[in-house]
Length: 77
Image 1: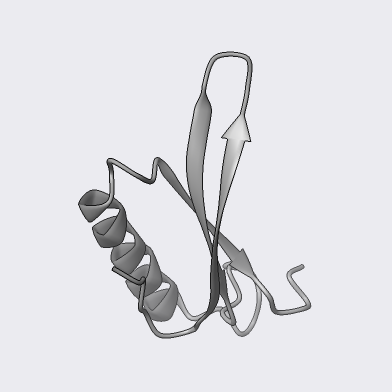
Image 2 (image 1 turned 30 degrees about the horizontal axis):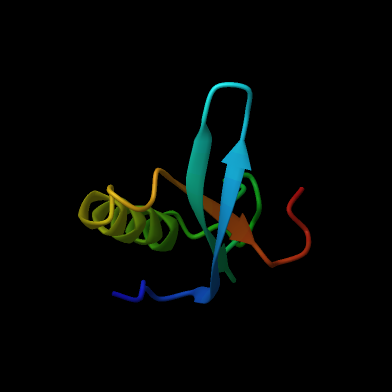
């Protein structure tokens, strides 16, 4: 099932490896500012994206261990 949520521009997958384990990571790129100090920060939109990501993670826990949100907006002071 593909991940769908407003403000998502790209979803990609990676594997992070440390000395003890490998972690499957889904990276979500968004046009939202994720820094709460930024004047254009939209708390409600970020909360919805986090909620949608957690819901997706709960349904895909056998394949994805972690989700990372990344803003593609400049000015992330």
